[in-house]
Image (tube, rainbow, N blue to C red; front, side, top):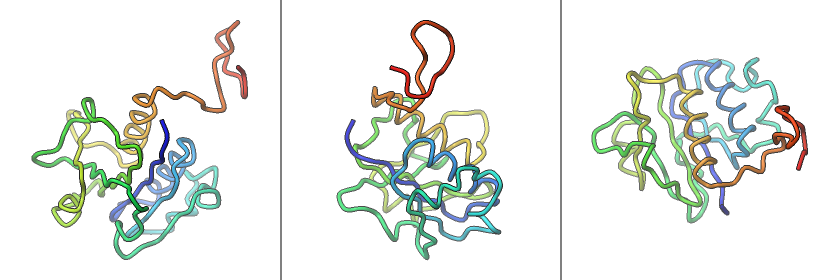
Length: 164
C-alpha cells in the first residue's frame, strides 16, 4: 500500500497519552503528528521512549486540522452517531486520523470537516494511546504489508531484527 498516515490529537487529556501516541506514531511510521491543546509537558513524557518528535514532524497547532497534507483524507475517530465501525472501514491511501480526548469528543467542528468518521466497537471508551495503536495496526493489517524491521525467523519462534 502506497501513501501515508498522519495523526492529529485534539485536546489530549494527559502527557502520558501524548507520549504513548508519539511512540505509536514512531512504531507505525506515521508521517506527521499535529497536537492541539496538549495539557502538560506532553512531548518530553517518559512514555515517548523513542523521542518520536525528533524523528517525525510534530506540530503544536491552533487547529488540529491546520496542517493536512494535500490530497489527504481526514478520518475522525470518535464515538458518535453515524460513525462506521473500524472493523469494516477501508483506510484511504493518504489519511489524517484525528482523535479527541478521553474525557470529551471531537465534536461536529471536526467531524463535519472529515471525509470519514469511524469508531472502535468496544464496551466502553478506550485510552487515547490505545485507540491510536488499534487504528494504526488496523491500517497496517488491512494493507497486507508487514515490512516491519522485526520479522519472525523461519526456523524458530524468535523475532529477529532484519530477518528475511
